[in-house]
Length: 75
Image (cartoon, rainbow, N blue to C red; front, side, top):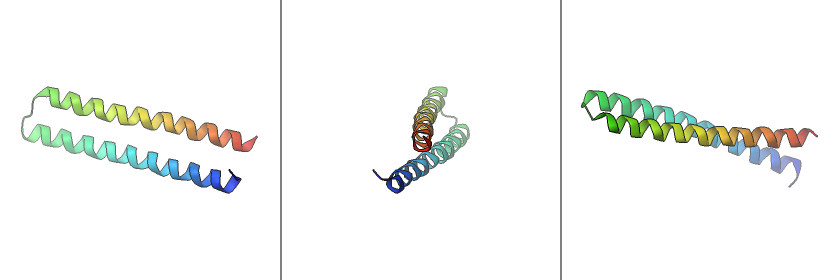
């Protein structure tokens, strides 16, 4: 891969990570609102919490990958 292709791949992955973080938080907030409004059982809130945590862990792993890729480009 050339330097430009690598930069584009890193930028694309960064955009995907940003969308996952934003989407997970928006869906989590909406689910908390709906759950409170309709008095859903707490197990559903826990399920939504675990799904949001999983999305954020995935994002953290990908952020680490992006950081490593940028470090390799410098050296």
